[in-house]
Amino acid sequence: MWRMHTNATVTIGSGGTSATLALDGQKLQMTILNAPSGAVFTKGDAVRLSGDPALPSGQTDQPNPGVTVLMISLPAGQYSLQVLFNPQWPGLQSSNYVTPKSVPLSSWSLTSHN
Image (cartoon, rainbow, N blue to C red; front, side):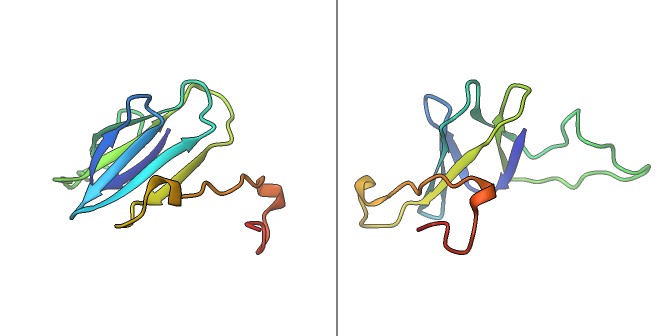
């Protein structure tokens, strides 16, 4: 499971493969590209999960008021997961945004975006 903590308000799209984060009048659209079967965004409170490592004896977690945890849930297995983060800039239309091409990690270089 992938997790990200945020102070933004999180809205998950109807199919579960997109999420919108909103904070102080600004928005960020996140999309799971080529989502593997069963991969979906979920959200929850910023608390320790039952499968998280235990704290050292005598230690406690600090509260995280106003923090949401955005997660990607996946069935067991191995995946190549791509998540696109698109800030929603004022004055731009959805057609102004371009999804970058997929480049395998083995082919990454300083110019692999070309």
